[in-house]
Length: 87
Image (cartoon, rainbow, N blue to C red; front, top):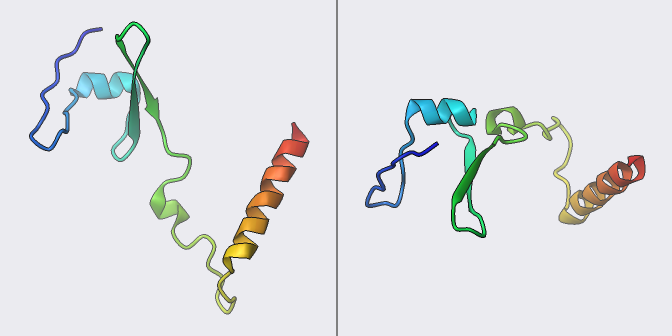
């Protein structure tokens, strides 16, 4: 598939509706464009794992003090260790 795009002075491009649909993109999603070794472009849709409105406030608990950076780091390390152990 060959498409032509126009680059704005801000460096942005606009994709046609057909291209957006073919990539399966939705508003706010990221499209990753890669140059292959042969310098031919390849592209793919990169949907976010969690949308910002969904994530907003998901860690807030009324009456609970905010976590320290060390507590956050420990929780991340524990989650990674648990996920790795399940493999």
